[in-house]
Image (cartoon, rainbow, N blue to C red; front, side):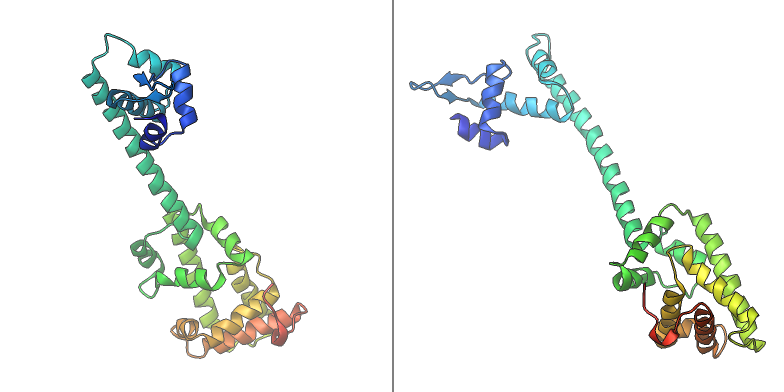
Length: 258
């Protein structure tokens, strides 16, 4: 076959085959009357062997020595090539799996399986909440901060996060039941503690905290989450956050995300 057809068949450029001919790596078996290269089936088989060795990282000089060694057993050589390629495939597959895990981390910020999430955060935790949050805030700077700051957390780290969250929620519910007044020192301290629970993942300003409190009091899912701890907790928490934001110069009614 002509050089153009041979190049197309093996997936290299005509220029590459010309170069390999020049350096003696793969000579075409014949030429036309006009001097054009013509490749036989054996020539194409040699090209394929060259490509295999290139994939394995060998230099062209080393490949030429291997292919031209008269003591080389062709079948044994192919078996070794196959073994090396199988090892390379396994390595690449493990790399693909690692990249998939990294992509999952970048997307959700949680390096836990759904089962681990439920085990650590409790049966009320819904693994799809992470995906919903990514859909809602995925294009924001804060979500990127969250993904970066949580990427290295281990299951044990997340267990500590879950324990701290439970302790905070218990303190909020207890203060609500005790009638702690929004705007009081105790309420403001709890508001700051609540804000800091988000600030460890992204730069959460008082204005953003007020926006979150507004969301919690209007979104059915978040409302149900806080109401399951104490009836009326959602509205009380909103008022506590609003009062603390106002104490820091933020008008809760016009608070914006940022």
